Length: 92
Image (cartoon, rainbow, N blue to C red; front, side, top):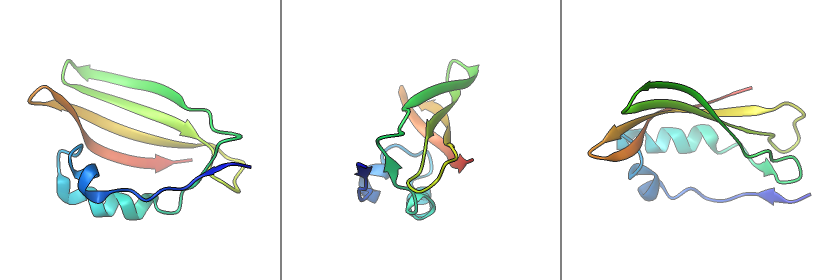
């Protein structure tokens, strides 16, 4: 079994958030996840196009030691021509 485990660079993450102050909260909420590459599906789902400047997406994966899929969902907004994360969450 191959496992992805990495440390998130909070400074780098802040570059991609509409509210950079959310970076620590996001890192802490996702720190428990490791991804099993044997079951990694890397499935991108476009959930909604709200406007030319706002979309909602999901990514599907299976955490290590679990038999249930988890979705990472994001609301993205275009700010000054760049797509930034406005909301990020995980659900099973």
